Image (cartoon, rainbow, N blue to C red):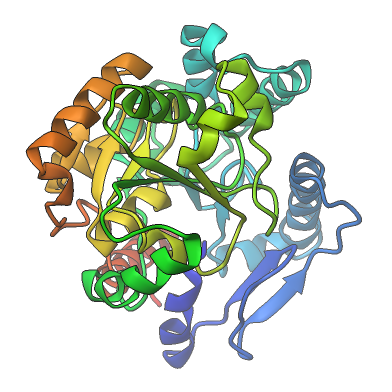
Length: 378
C-alpha cells in the first residue's frame, strides 16, 4: 500500500473520492478520508487479527446493510492480503499456504517455535477463507511472477491474477546517493574503505530470511583468510538486534564475532546500505523483497537464494549470483566473487521493480479496467 498511496493525489485531482482504513499512516493528503482503526495492541499478530475483524465488520456494516448494495455499486474496494475477502482488488505480497510448504521443506533449518507454527496455521486458515468464492469476480495483484503462477490453484475459477511488482523511490535509492554517502556511512560504522561489506536487511523473521546462512557463510569466509564484514540492519526497533543466540548456536565465540556490525531499524535504511558492497540475502521465502530492490537501485550487487521474487531481480537484469541454501556453498561463491573482483561491479538495474511513474500507469489502468467491469466509468 505504501507504493500506492502516493499515487492517490492524481486520482483526487480528477474527482475520485478516496477513503483509507488503516491502523496508522505515514503521511496523508488532506483530501483523503482516513478512517483510523483504533487498536489497543502492539504485537503484529494481534494487530493483524484485530484489523481483520474490524475490516470485515466495517465492510458488512457499510456495504451489506440497508442501502449497502447501492453504495457497493458505486465503490471500488481494494484490500491487502486477507483483510477483506469481498474486495474488488486484493493485493498479495505473501502467500502463507506456499510458505507452509517451504516450512515443511526446510523444517530443521527454520525451526519454527510453537507460537510461530500456531500463527502460521491460523494465517493459512484465514487465507483459505479469503480464497473461497465470494459472489463476484476479483482481481488479485501479485508482486512476483513465480508467486502469481503458484498461487493459481488456490483461487476460484473466474478470478484473475495481475502482476503488479513492488516499487521504489528513485530519489532515495540510486547509485549517486551511494557514491555520495559511502565514505561517511563507513566512517560512522567504523569500517575502512577497503573492507568487503555484505549487508543483510531484516525487520523480523530472521530465521525465515536466512540469517543463520549469512552469518555462517561470512564466518567461513573469514576463517579461510578471505576477510569480510556482515552489516546487519533491522530488528524489532531502533536498537541493534541481539544476535548472541545465533552466534552461540553456530559455535562462533565472541572473539570471532568481530566481523559482524549491527544497526537497528531505521526509516532511512539507505544511510547504512550505502556502506555495503553487496546485499547477502539467503532467504527461504519472500514475495518480492523491498530490500533487494532498494539495494539494487543503490548499485549493490545481489547474492540471493532462489526464493519467490528472486526471478524478478537476478533474472531481470540485476547483477549478482544465485546461491544455494547451504552455508559452505554460499561461502565458496562469495569467495570466488571477492577474488575475481566481480563483487565490486556496480549494479545498473532494478530488475522488474517499478519506479513511481510506471507504477502510476499500471495502477491507473487496473483501476479503470476493474471499474468498467462494475458497469461504471470513472
